[in-house]
Length: 484
Image (tube, rainbow, N blue to C red; front, top):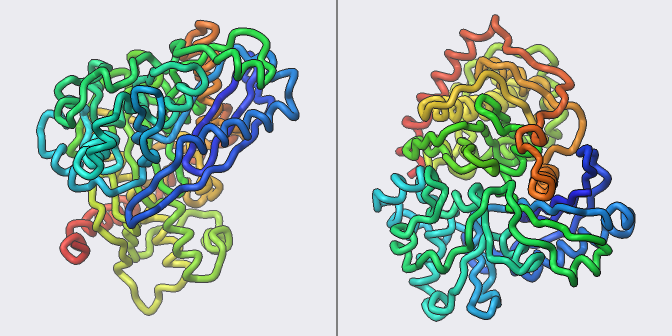
């Protein structure tokens, strides 16, 4: 048996999988986020441990026999969090999370140093770890002086599970301290934030052994033998392992609260000016590129609240057949945009409204706006050297066949809908646990799910969609001066 632990922002999921990768069961422990000031977002690492205990105990109640047979544990987690540890292993302050924006000035300052983009392959975003440490040094110098180790959230969980200060490449690539091409810490970038390599955990690949479960926990959970803890992965890379998006040409589009276009790469292809993330993957000698839009289903949910109709009712009004764009264009920048604009201040808009523009036309425009934002991501990935021949759709928005037809038509590639199942980060983490414990071939383990159906581009609407995309593409530079 293999255990996957995914430390998310709202909870910890524990998933139990057998050697044939059949999911036995899962359980959760919930988490809250503390927001003591505007733009702040924090969690107490002690709550992560409590939530993990709750999740594993939930599994133990139903699957004690199976839990006893666990041989490998994989970790996945929310990225970028700054967990500060003193020389005695104590937490110095609440963890500053990925969606905390307090360090925007420090991020801009580090990003202005050309070494950061050159070595990491990425813009220094306020959510990343390095600017958070620069903020702590400036605003909480007494805490900064006591920092002995900086850990990412899932790696703090590892410290509790196995007593080891270890991280892996995919999560560490989101700190702004990793030499992403060489897969090692950069002494220069650490020095730029007043730190040294001794402040960092050691690095392994996500598929490698990175500790063994402590005897005390093994006894509490009824785990009989040695349980290896794998390096694991940041949440997106772990999801990609769960989806089998691990080889060149493999890609998925996630239509969740935010939207992600994720492509696996056999080589390192940075292009930071496009606001594409170029990170290490969880598998050795593999990287990935990722474009992120900040409002995907969030945009439809916002429109749903305005109209008083559910998202399903709104999309249902469009029917099954893809419609030609109506001339109404929606920019889904409700909370700023990441790829390709890196613009926190930009805001959304409708243009092209007329007396004929009814609710149905605006619903269509909202879906198309998100589609075209994902197309922007595809163009950014292409400009960085990635080619995509098809994508797998995941996330709540993928339940709308209309939306997927819109995406297939705009991107010009087939969209595969996976058969029912749980292919998320906890499943990917369990796969990494299996690989670390058995030495199995990572690519052979991280297979793609069965495809339930494929939605092809609607060729007859290709030209109309291209024209509508060009209208959308011209909208950002036109509205930017009005939003800033």
